[in-house]
Structure formats: structure tokens, C-alpha cells
Amino acid sequence: MTVSKISLKKDDVQEGKLVKVDVNGKSIVLTKIKDKFYAMDSVCSHEGGPLEEGILEEDYNLVCPWHQGIFDIRTAKASLDTDWVTNLHSYPVIIDEKTLEISIDTG
Image (cartoon, rainbow, N blue to C red; front, top):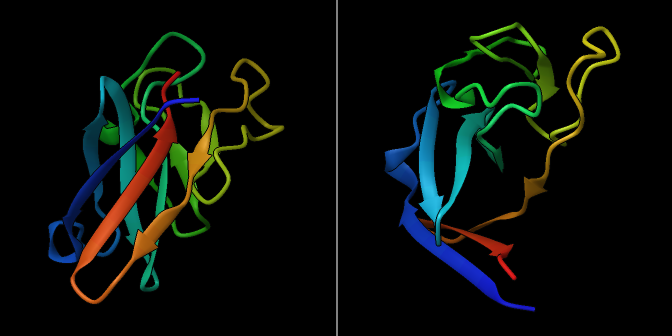
């Protein structure tokens, strides 16, 4: 198992905004909702839409900009309402006083 990680400043992620980060070649979308941080794959499982360009709804749904596939930003699970998409991966966000760290298995 190979673990790759990225660290960034907490201030780089604003409430309700979507931020794309790259972790050793893997695209991740990161957001902050109600002072909690969430990270998941940023490429839609349907046809590869860029989820960082999607719409983040108030109920934690992230809507793909290409074909409106819906994912729960907390778990990366696909909504049953959009059966053309499949679950993605979510990643834990480790938080300290000023920074965030995302670790993923890249091998």
C-alpha cells in the first residue's frame, strides 16, 4: 500500500465552496460545510464530469455539472435518484490548528 498526502491551509477552503486538489495524480474535491471539511473523488463516475464545477446543495448533495448525477459530499455515495452514477470514494480530512491533510491510498 502506498499512501500519498497533501497539506493545505484551512483558509484555502471557504464555507460552501468547492476546491479541486491533486494528490499524487488523483483529483480530489474538497469543501467545508458548517465548519466541517469533506473530501471525495472529483471525477464523476458517469462520464468523468468535473465535480469541482458542480453545485453544492444545502443538503450535502453535490450535483455533477454535466448530467446532474448526485453524490453525498460526506460519503461520496451516489443518490438513488440518479442511478446512472455509481459511488465514489471519500477521504478523511485531518485538521489541526491551521492546516488540513488528506491522505489517500495510491497504490
